[in-house]
Image 1 (tube, rainbow, N blue to C red):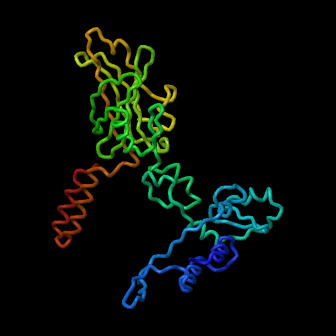
Image 2 (tube, helix red, strand yellow):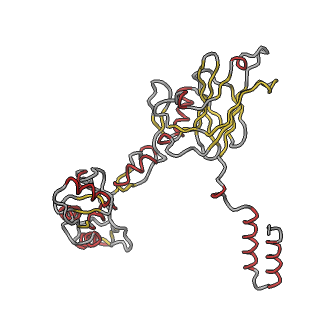
Image 3 (cartoon, rainbow, N blue to C red):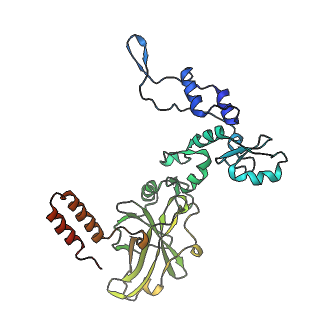
Length: 347
């Protein structure tokens, strides 16, 4: 293993050698175990192309935390005359509380360690394989798509990925699970109050919950997307939900809205925090005795014009121009192809 004193000298900024030189010196002195291949007579043959060796060490977190903001050090780092190490952006804040600021010295050796000190994502058990720089760990964890979601059933404490939750919903709670094709309506039964229906998008396997709650004599129906980190990023979906009588479609209620998101850590959203459709008693208990159908259509939000992909016409022009370049040995062919490519474009 690498000499611990040397490593600590790098972290404390007490050596002028750069980190690359330290690793090279450690290799020359045999401080790393070789992963070479054993040859004849027990000799170890070094692997020609070897990645830089990696080590795992344990340090007190104070070595990696700023003395001003008390958060993980963000490079570039600096040291005052009193040996206090701070983030580059915290020098002004530190000057207020330290009487020995004087001139700051750059800690380039420490920067090399801070930039390369990584730890596994805290959601590794849920599928994230990232090794995250320590100073960026908090940002990663708030946006990690492998963060767990939760079962909203009262008394159930399962935390798992959305895909695992679908299996749990079906096996443990017997909630119906239905696949949906984006852009096409799907017919469901109106859930009983406090009932849930699980929808799974074809293709991306996004998970949606259709829930129903009693609202006096009426029923409030809502839809959300089960998303890690409580929907740190807005779900890229909108939905249209309506209830109607099969034989009299004039008797209907409908709502169109963006799909909300939740990791369900606090259960299903309250009415005050949710957008829902109210199915009135007159529709739930029609004189004809018919049971209303619930129709759900989920689709991707349209791409903003500025970010839209090239139009088919532009793509066609690009392809034809490329063909013209390939055929450039034939001047007449080039002229004909380019003429066809631009003849129907607006002036």
